[in-house]
Image (cartoon, rainbow, N blue to C red):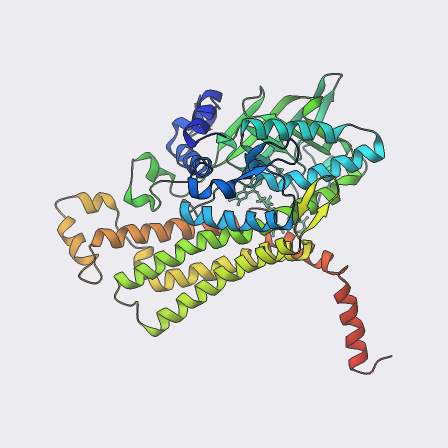
Length: 481
Ligand SMILES: Cc1cc2nc3c(=O)[nH]c(=O)nc-3n(C[C@H](O)[C@H](O)[C@H](O)COP(=O)(O)OP(=O)(O)OC[C@H]3O[C@@H](n4cnc5c(N)ncnc54)[C@H](O)[C@@H]3O)c2cc1C
């Protein structure tokens, strides 16, 4: 299994080009924003080698029987679903940011659907997918989930859009493979992942067969173009800031990825034209992925709570009753997000021939709850931190000898904590709240909008036996026969 340094070297060697700051870089890792995000992933590769974590992060592949990284594994039990939530919380707590190791959440749903299509249609998608997952496991490679299409007018079906490429589609197919065209947006980690696992982001109806495609594409495939997003505080990285970053070690990075007629050989195509299976695939992916949010956001929240608690101490308010009360509210939010993820995992079930996924109602509830709760979390952090969160001079002022003595005096809280510590803590809270590593954006739309989760929650809950029992109970209790 790769170490962090080996992972970084392997990405470096791919020389993934990127358009960033208005120009093309031939190797995305040269840019500090991409590098900071890749270093977060490298830290997760290193964790697999830490003696106290090795047992938890090395598992036996159900495909080969070989030891593989937990992050490459298809969960084969409820315990492994639970472990995923716990490990994600642990990693995000250590990194204070997205640890970006959740592609495995796509494996079980896709293995299940490909097997189903093969059984019903005589195709060979399942064996191809198994081979690709084995390749990922043996080489310990990172894949980015390439799901979100540009979508144009949201109400217009793909095949009726004025621009036919608003959803990624197959534009050619021959004996060797297919050619795909379109774009995938908001791609976390695309510039430092070895592969892209292309999946549809929504269902399509008959007539839109060209838009039903799942496949794997290496990040350096001809025709792929990476265009970096611009985040609100990117310039801090470029100017070589340290304290002002908040999280001085790690970052997160997204791209738009253009698929400008990318050729994909058949052995990497896992679904092509079978629109009727997309509804189940999309739902199962949400079910599989969304419990991870409970671990992911609670790990992030753990750091925010700790930073807020420290800030309260720096402000001389750690024993104040209302501060304790608000910190308790923050803990309650974090533990509720975690509990939701845990419960979804514990009620998981097996998809035949594939692996385990969580309970669909509880999974969607996890993400829906988190998408709202993080706003409360940040409200409380900002409340306790004070106006300095949005009105804080920076490290350049701190280092300017003409004014630094005033900074040291007037940015101080309690006397035994230097102003610099207070500034660093403010920046960390800023980073996690709405800065370079914002939990808000990730919780609101990452993994699907809260609204999408809510709709799935309602849809799946309708089939739960206790809903019909409750209807009967309601009628019975008030005397309606
Ligand atoms: C930080 C971050 C990281 C991400 N990482 C990835 C990634 O790695 N890979 C990936 O593939 N994607 C990624 N995404 C994308 C994410 O999955 C999408 O942002 C999300 O699914 C919402 O899609 P959208 O942004 O197109 O917004 P929209 O779908 O336009 O949603 C905006 C609002 O419109 C509503 N809406 C949408 N369609 C309809 C409709 N037909 N009728 C009524 N209401 C509608 C939604 O419910 C929502 O309230 C990431 C997003 C973020 C913010």
